Image (cartoon, rainbow, N blue to C red; front, side, top):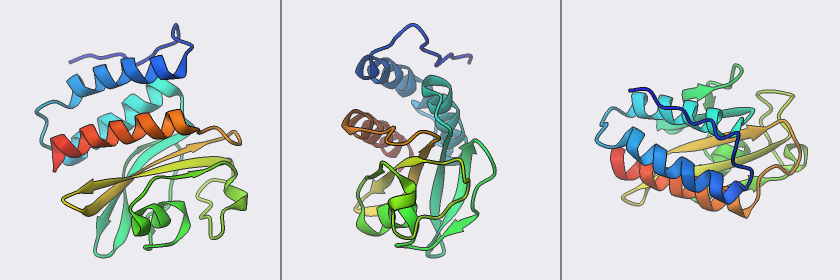
Length: 161
């Protein structure tokens, strides 16, 4: 199956997310393999939006362990409550950080990361992992990103868990 998620001709962010979600739903439908689905999800998000870093951390043995991602080398594990990812896990909510240097306890896997959004993958009331997206620009994520990335995660959770 070949799919292109590039949307260079669509400039409105909301419209880009709507087109992405439609394509993404088809991409992951009836695919039960967690690593494969998360790998393609990372690639699709990076291709569609040009994010600096996009990937997943999965809960294993009381830590977030690096899963499939697109971007530069990343941290291997994150403790619950530590950094942006650990905070999203501990609190079970999306965390948007306009300036990572202002976030207490931020874990700098890359000094080029300037802003971040982390969305927890919640199934049956339990956080299974997080979607972590970094930007090399300050204040790059807003309510539109939050809304549609949460919808992206809902699609993933409904297919995988």
